[in-house]
Amino acid sequence: MSKVSYCLIALIVAALLFMGAVRVREWYTQRQEEKEMASQNDGNPFTFQQVPVSLAAPEIEAVQTPVKYKRAFPEIYLEDAPLTTEQQVQQAQETIASIVEDFQSDPAVAQFNQEVAEASQGELNGLVDLSTQNLQQILQQNPEVARIVEKHAQNADFAKALQEIFENPQFQQSVKELQGESPLMQKQPAQ
Image: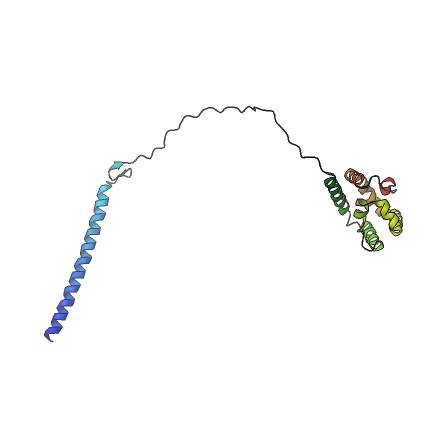
């Protein structure tokens, strides 16, 4: 081997020794720091860096006795503004539609609604329209609708459904608001 090779090997060995010394120094300082931290905490769990730590809860403060609430003013109840004529009409129409809708599954009422719609060429949808619009005017303009009403009034199932609808006080009040006394209301079918 040549002198250059020996120099390179010596240089590598010196570098390895230096790196090893650095690692030993880091390990030694880390170990010293751990011992120092352990010595600060002398093993007593209620001390930190040899200063006592209190885990006691703070003392409860005295609370005043509750004071009963006394109203300073009498209670005031606000009422909604009275409905306008348009709102009353709309509310009456919605009430009638809701009541009649409960009877839509009844076959006699469904048949009546279908015949009224056919006779009026789709202008009227059945019992709801007859109840919410001017019934006398409808019957004068469409005599076929008047015949359909008379024909179905003789059907016991339809008459029973009509009687249940007409006996509903909300229905009666809504019809009065919309069209006054209706000929159907005056002439209640027999059971």
